[in-house]
Structure formats: structure tokens, C-alpha cells
Image (tube, rainbow, N blue to C red):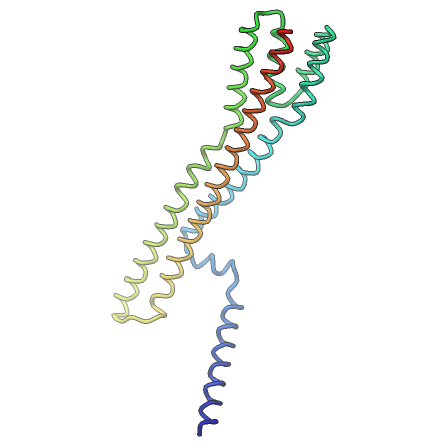
Length: 227
């Protein structure tokens, strides 16, 4: 009798495991996301926008200080040798933010140092504003995405109570759809918001490094001109 009961328990456990495995295998990521309902559409759009802005700004900001040391060295060498035409040509052909600042400084050579410094500072501020373009979008997404997830949570709860009111009873089948929508949208909203938040602050760290490099390069250039 004991062996029979043990066999039945073992068989039931194996059957439950097989069913659970089968259910898990049958639910793909796309199907799971689709359980979130219509709220997943704007969340998905925000996720695409997040990836686009992060990648595009990352490439732009990284390029801003590209080969800045090499550029400054060439300009300093040309200035010290008295070849201002070459210095201007080198600075003007650079397609970077720091190159634009140095170009402004080189083209102002001959004017008072304070005026050169002010012109370079104004150009630097303008270049930083260009680099900051679209970063605010990430801040907005970081705030909106979790709110959309919360909207999905409310929608899922409403669906649960609506199904219960129609059937006048409570069962797992009635509440499963609403729970799926509630949990999937909440998770998706939080993930997208978190990615946007991380991307926003990471890009700002890169931008601060570029600003520091820009200021250092400007100081070295001013010292060279003053000499």
C-alpha cells in the first residue's frame, strides 16, 4: 500500500513537472509581451526611441573630443613656427566640437588674449548645447515609461474585476488575463524607464569629460598664444 501511494505521488509529481515544462516551453517572449495588451505599444515605441537616442548621442559625444590632443599639438607647432596659415587650415578642417573651439581661437589670433578667450568660451558653450541635443528626451522617457506601466497595472486590475463581475465567481482563469497585463506592463515600463535613466546619466558623464577636455585644450591654446 505504501509503495502504491509512493508510486502515485511520484507519477503525479512527474506529470506536474512535465505540464509545467510544456507550458513554459510554449510561452515565447513575444507571446509574453503580447499579454501586456495595447499599453505595450507606446512602451515599445519608447524603448526604440531610447536605444536610438543613446546610440546616436554616444557616437556624437565620443567624436567631439576625437584626436583632440593630436589636433592641439599640430596647431601649437604651427603657431610656434609662425605659420598661422597652416594653423588656421588645420583648425578649420577639423569636424569636432573641440576643433570648432580651436578654430575660433586660431582665427582670432592678433586680438587681445581676453577677447580670444571669450570667443572660444562662447563657441564652447554653443558646441556643448549641440552635444546636449535630445538628452532631455531620455529624461522624459525615464519618467513616462514607468507611468505607462502603472496605467497597464490599473487596466489589468479593472479587467480582473470586470471578468469577476460578469462570471459572478472567482477563478484563476478569470483573473489570469488581467494579472498578465498588470505584471507585464509594469515590468516593461520599469525596464524601459531604467534604461533611459541609465543612458541619460551615462551620456552626461561622457559630456562632462568632453567639457573638461575642451576647457583644458582652450587653456593650453591660450597659453601658447600668450607666449
